[in-house]
Every structure is written in structure tokens, then in C-alpha cells.
Image (tube, rainbow, N blue to C red; front, side, top):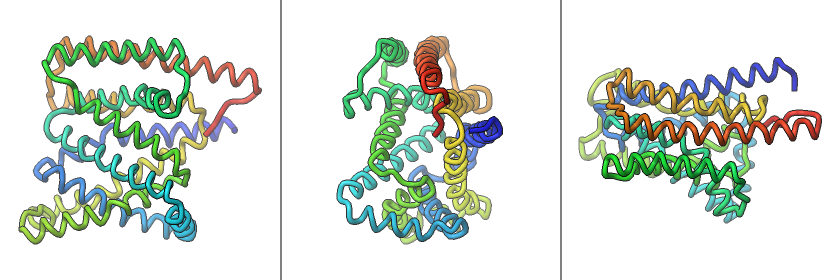
Length: 308
């Protein structure tokens, strides 16, 4: 892997996380539309957008072959269905959280997501927990506990976002397909539900699409591209950079979301928030440094870096 490829990969991956980080601005523009309609529109238009991408990139034959293979494999079909439902749940909670003034807690969910993914690996895949990972979990748990005791409620938004995305990643391990094909399959599974709900809204006269303004209509349609583009950039970038670099870049998105919540949308960030986040950031620092050391040792041993 050349330096140029690594730089290009870092650029694409960084751009994907940048888009994910500022995506709350997009959902805020739709805060006059219910979260359930935004989700249904996001699923439907993502599916349409991805069909166009597959045709334009000449991946349609690959998509058909992959679909046939999964349909004949009950285990993969179940994993695909679970992955589709989990990512839909994740999207809904995130959109609702952003448009109900809970962006700070939503950002917390994506900060703790890497640690939740490791925990799921230990519980489900029986992976071993290192001493450094144990320290990271204790620090992160302390941060969540501080928020819970201070505000008298469990930060369920953050935990549900982290768990749903972590479980989604776990389900995806059973469906090893190219990212564009994967997103098309996932949206295809839940698209009938989304379309059915949109038809219901039209029949009941409760829809926002074609009822408020052209701007709203374009934003709802554009939700498909807003969903797919960063994922495609991420897939292109992740193939060209070391996993350790990707681990650091992933914190761009929740950091931008946190900053937007505090400085743009005026959400309250108290001293308790600061203390809790300091524990989370310290946990992530310990965890990330341990991964860097691991990859450095592997690089020294094998004479090359580990790229995706």
C-alpha cells in the first residue's frame, strides 16, 4: 500500500465521518416532519438511490447473484433481516434524538459504540478481554453512571444507539458482501414496511411529502443520497488505510455532533456532562492507544501494516 493510497483512503474515510458528523443539520431542517415519516422516506429513497448506484457502477449482476445466494441460505437471510431492523431502529432513534434536542446524548452513543462492539465480541463471539480493555470499560461505565445518578435517568438514547449499531455490526459479520450491495439489501428488506407506512400516511392525509413545500419534498428525497454517499466514501477509504487510523477517524463524527449540539443548537452542557464525557474520552484514549500498540507490534512482526 503506497503513501498516496493511504492519503486518499484517509481523505475518503475522513470525509465520510465529516458528513456523518454534520448530518444532524440535515435532520434539523426536517424537524417539522415526524421522525417516523423521515425514517420511512430515508429507507425508501435510500433503496431507490442505491438501485441507481448499482446500475451506474455496473454492479447489478453482482447484486442479483448475492441476493440469490442469501435467499438460499437461511442463516444469512435471518442475519440480513436482523441487520436491517437494527439499522432502521438506529436511524429512527438518532433522527428523533436530534430533532428533540438530544444531540449531546446521541453523540455519547457513538463515542461508546466502539467499546460496546468489543463487549459484544466478548459476550457473543467469546473473544478475550484484555486488561487494558477492562480499564476502558470501567472508565466508560463510570461516565454513564455519573450521568445516570446526576439526572435521575439512564441515558437510554446513547445506550440504544450504541447497542443497535454494535449488534448491527455483529449481524453484518455473517453477511460479508460489498458495502453498496449490502446497503441495497438492507434497505430492500425494510422497504416494503416503509412504503406501506408512507401509503398509510397518504391515505390518512397525514403525510408531509407533497403537502408542505417543495423544499421539504426535496429534503425527504435527498435523505436517500445523504444516507448512501458517506457510506460509499467510507467503504472506499477503509480499504486503503490501516485499521488503527480508521479507529481514530471514527471519533470525528460524534465530536462534530457534540459541538453542533452545544454551540449551534444551544443544548445544555453542564459540569456533570463534562465530567461524564471526560471519563468516556479517557476510556477511548486508553482503548485507542492499546490498539495502536497492538498494530505497531504486528507491523514490526510482519514487516507491513494491516490495511482493510
